[in-house]
Image (cartoon, rainbow, N blue to C red; front, top):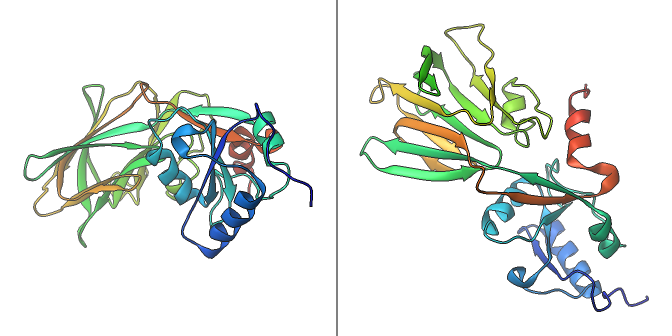
Length: 262
């Protein structure tokens, strides 16, 4: 087999993998063929796994400028490119860069503690008990819904609009549209409310009504805060996430295709 290691001047790559047999096997295959460096020295970070691992990788290396190129070695792979060990360096050179901004959650708990966290997909509020949640929704200082009775409600980014948001019958948001999706989860009252599309600059505040009787948790990707009293969500334009996709199968095309899926 010819030597696949990149010549001087090519991009320095780091490779990280999820803790599954499929991903570990791919890691061994790629590191045998390509020279790698530590993530903090890399020009591109290659992530092997599924969408969950991609989110973990984006959060883990948030402070680095290196784009993340995911390859699908997991279950769900919406944010991942197809896996093949051949031609990796050429794919990285020719890939399309997509820049995303996360939303920031600021949650205040029963005890008065305030927790902040970034979410690349969505911030979701979820009931903790058998009783449905009661939530007041204020947008940019104006109360838009005095009482939403529901299993929960979420704010999704365009990149996250095909995840939990879509399962909750929220809209798919094309990338670059500068909007967020506000989507109820199993709304009981008002029963026919299907949510709203908000400008990216919107500041959303959720107040939990009857919080002791009807406790609610708030989740920003993998960060969960239980027993919240209020949650504020807004896009954080100071943080930029860099993803790299194969030109012929980029994220914009995937979002468009998802809108025509049966």
